[in-house]
Amino acid sequence: MKRSREIIVNKKYLNESREKIMNKKYLTEKGETVGVTPGLGGDCYIVARISATGSARRIKSPALPVCTTSELAQVKLDAYAQKKGWREISE
Picture 1: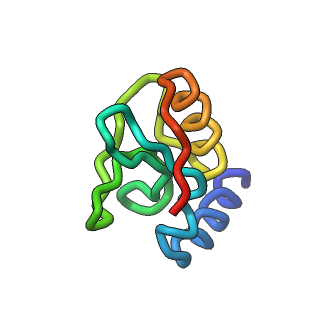
Picture 2 (picture 1 turned 90 degrees about the vertical axis):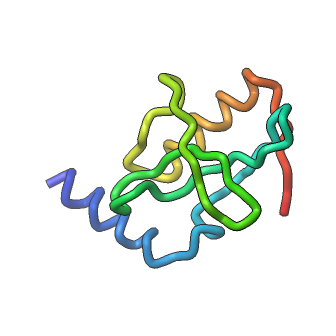
């Protein structure tokens, strides 16, 4: 039953734009923008490098697993960004 609820919640987010799903974004030491975005298939969320065109490439790290909610992915990203010394950006 819990899994069904997660799927329903995730489908709600899929109907929103990527920009609404991504909360805080960070700027890496290399000048890349990093944020939370829906993963392929739409039933998960990933932390990814976001290009100027909006395409996303997942950051593969044990500290940044694929998550079932955007909120959980954001918490993981916030901790990871603090550890890396990335600065938060506003758009």
